[in-house]
Picture 1: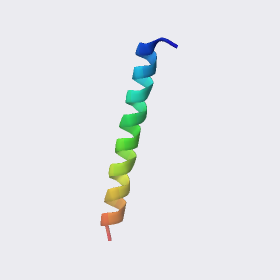
Picture 2 (picture 1 turned 135 degrees about the vertical axis):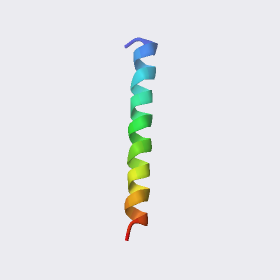
Picture 3 (picture 1 turned 180 degrees about the vertical axis):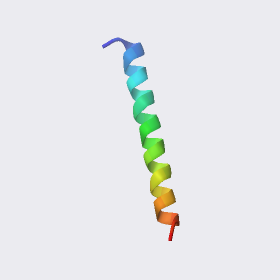
Picture 4 (picture 1 turned 30 degrees about the vertical axis):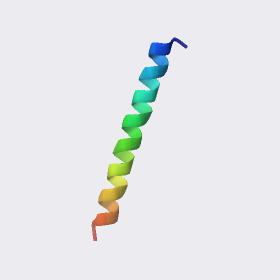
Length: 31
């Protein structure tokens, strides 16, 4: 795996984690 591909994978994982974190916060805030 080239470094550029590894960076792309890390970016996708970070983006997915951020979306999941925001979704969890919204679910926790909603009544």
